[in-house]
Image (cartoon, rainbow, N blue to C red; front, side):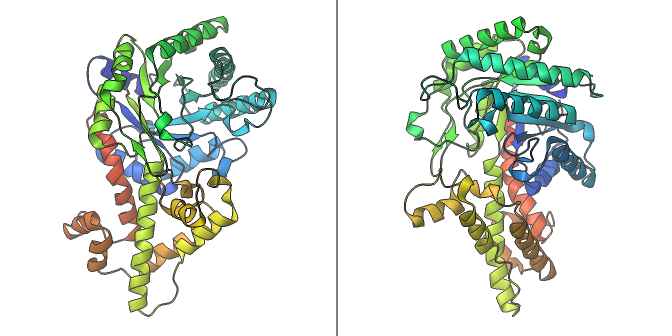
Length: 437
C-alpha cells in the first residue's frame, strides 16, 4: 500500500507548490482543533509526537507510543474523521531523552523507542542521532561527527525495518534524516548565531548517510528517505522571531530540486508570517513542523477565558472561580525543570516568560492533574453561565464575529478550538492542504 506522503512529494516534484504541515503536539485541545481543521480541508493530517513527549517510559505526557496512538484514534472517532487520512510520525527519535547517559545505554533505549513507535503504527520516522551522549568525545560547541550520527541512525533504521516487517502494518515506514537538527521547542542560544545550512554540508550529510545505509544493507530503506532536516534561516526564542529570507536559502532550494525523491523538512516554523510559510513550501521546504505556536494560541485562549470568567462570575455573584492562572503558575514554580534553564533574568522577567514566552514552556504543565482539574472547572463555569457577547467581543473579536454570524457556538471549548485553528489555517493555505491532491 502506497504511503500518502509519497503522493504529496511526487506532486510537489512535478512542480506544484504543495506540501504538508506536521502538528508536533500532544496537547489534546491542539489535536482536537487539528482534526477539525483537516476535516474542514478534506486533507490528510500529519501528527507527530517527540521522544520527550511520548516514549516507552511515558515521556512528560505519561503516554507510550501505543497509548498516544489510541488517544489519536479516539479523537478522530469522536469527530468521524477518516482513519486512513491520519499519518502518525515520531519526531527526534533517538537518544535525545537519555543523552546524559553513555552512548551504549542511550542507544539501547533509543532502539526500544524506535521499536515501540514502529510497532504502534507510526509510519513517518525522524531518525535523530545528532546529539552528544555522555561519553562522546569532541568539541561540543560543534555538531557531532557525521559518521557517528549516520552509523547510529542506521542502527535505529534497522530496528524500525525489522519491526515493521513483522507487524501487520501494510504501509512501509518513511524516514527523515539530517544532522543540523534544531533543539525541540525553540532556540536556547542567541538567535544572532543562526546560520543557514550550506549546500556543501547537506551534500556531505546525504552522501555519508547513503554510504552508511548501503554498508548496513538498508538500500530499500534508503529509497524511503523522503526528507532532510535543514536550517533555512527560521527560528524563534523567548521574545524573538527570525523570519524567512528566501535569498539566504536560494542555493539550498536549487540543490534539492535535483533530488527526485527528497524535499526539505523545516523545524521551528512557528510564528512565521503566512506569506513566509507559503514561500518556504514553494522553495521545497515542503514539510513544515509546528508545535509551540499552537499551544501558544491555546494558552492565549485560556488566559482570555479566565479573565472573562472572573468578570462574569463576579457579576453573577458566584465564587467558584477556577483560578487556572494561579494553579498553573504554582505548578511551574513547584516543578521548574521544564523552564528554568530557558528563562533568564530577575524573577519578574522569568515570571513574564513563564506566561508569555514564544517558546511556550507552559505547554509542559497542562497535563498535570491539578491543572487539568482547574481547566475543567473553567470550562464548566463558562458552560453553565455563558458570558454575554460583549465580553466575547472584548477578548475574542474574531470568534465574536463568527458567533454573530452563526458560524460558531458561544461555548468555551468551541472558542478554544477556533482560536487554535486561526494558526492552523495559515499552514493549511501555505501547504495547499485545503485542496484535494
